[in-house]
Length: 517
Image 1 (cartoon, rainbow, N blue to C red):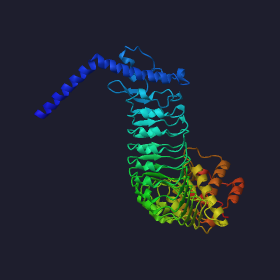
Image 2: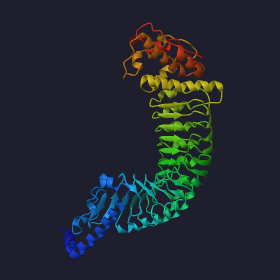
Image 3: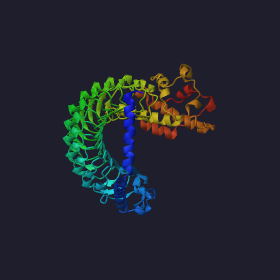
Image 4: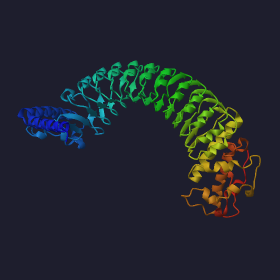
């Protein structure tokens, strides 16, 4: 053993002896007992003000003990934690069913409190300004209560605060500029309140901030350019407010952003090309604004994106082919814009896509057969693609066909799209011999979890519905029935089978009474 290591061990042993002697002194014990007794009294006094204090089963441990008992420390109480000296450093009463206020909470009695979580209760009225007495507080969560009035500016004195969550209350007024003094903050959640006025530029001083969520308030004004200084930010959610103006170029400095949601505001201008440089983005939502111009091709650089939501704007031009490079995309929402031209033929590259909504645009041309490659697709909305009678009514039925067939099969019919599109669109009938890929027994096309119908009449009704659905999916829009025709067929058409269901093939179904408009 080296002399240095031996010296360290001796020093540690000496320190331990001093600590034991110190805590054994009557004066030290008396000091600790007095301090913890004060904290215990403060908690009991606060509990007594609860409207339902006699019915809180999970706080039965909060009871008086003899003052000469070392267990007077509330460290043994539910939701309370202490340091080695027996002083309270943490109070966690989340979802405890408390009904009351913080008026009688003696903040001054907890000089060492670092963690305070009172979320998911029924606490109401104001957040007292005296909360600033908790000078060592690191974590403060008062979310999901019924606090009202304004956020006290005194919270800005809690210099050690790392996590501040006041979300899902009824707080009103403006966001205090003093929050900009909380320079250790990594999380700031003020969402789902009634906060108004502007987002203070002082928020840009919170250089350590990782998550900023201010959504579902009544905030107005423009997005402050100072938010561009929050270079550690990974989540920026400020949707569902009344923000206006353009998306500031400073947002392009937030290279760490993973989720950006600015939807449901009144933002205007074009979608900035610099958003394509935020290559860590998985969520980009600019929906329900007043954005105009084209969708920049640079969005196709966001290879990690799994949500792209641009619906309900005034976007025009074509859908950039670069969007087909977003191979991790799960949700693509472009509906209710003024997009034109055709759907990119390479949209089938988006193999992970589950929800594709392009409706209420002015898209034209044929629907790409590559849609059949989207085997994970659950929701497909293409209706009202163009403001022409012909395409409009024929695209309505496509979505109907997908949903109907999915219901019958118990899964998305994407596996069958490619083979179905091989059927000649100009003919009204075809023989099974010309469809060698359609030799699958029709019973295998139906939901395998349900016994197939054995009665011929019932089997005919099921196959009629399948036949109508596939007619709606015809790759040639001119050969699809109108929705009016579909309605008539649903009421009248019944296929008469010449042999039992289990002997019929998929190809034979497609040639039975093939429908045209």
